[in-house]
Length: 51
Image (tube, rainbow, N blue to C red; front, side, top):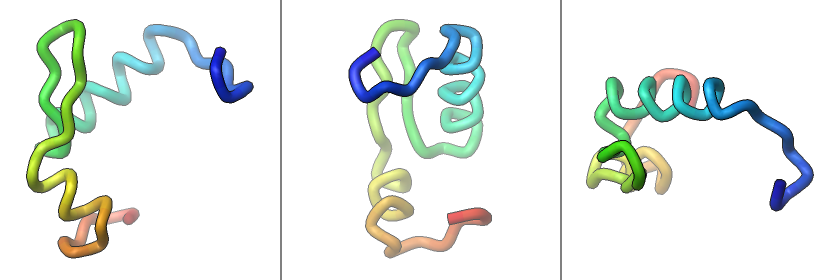
């Protein structure tokens, strides 16, 4: 726990799976990496529901 936020591994995997499904990250089972679209959404250059 780095930032004082507790989360189960199952919850983290579910969140990563959702991000992959939305095209915002790539995941190889060990490493999650932001995609170009993910960068655009994070920088507010692309619209995304809930962002």
